[in-house]
Length: 166
Image (cartoon, rainbow, N blue to C red; front, top):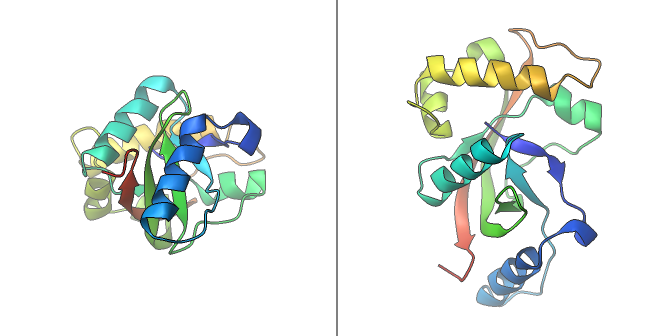
């Protein structure tokens, strides 16, 4: 799955988000920056499972639809972006850095990319099934309807810091 619909505002963030940002930039000997924080998926079970896969080094990509970004007026991810990934409750666990972004039609996503997502049995068939269902939920409150040619943001990332500096 991919980023949850809620990118948390400063006032809604768990104190761990502030802490991980402070620790990360202190570790780099750079001035503090507040990073956006978010969780994967639209439900607690999947959000926390995806987070565990990221921490384990298995999940290295996420795939929101371009239409969801457009419908919500969010800026598209770009190489070099840093984000705090939280669990469903908003507790920070790691900072990721975007290393590649491509916009690819749903029907052109391949098995190599599905493997980078790291979910389920890691097959293309699994990726297509769970993401197709997700895009229906993601776009439900928008003017868009999922279709096989819809543009998907394929965002690859790496973990650059863990809570506690690990």
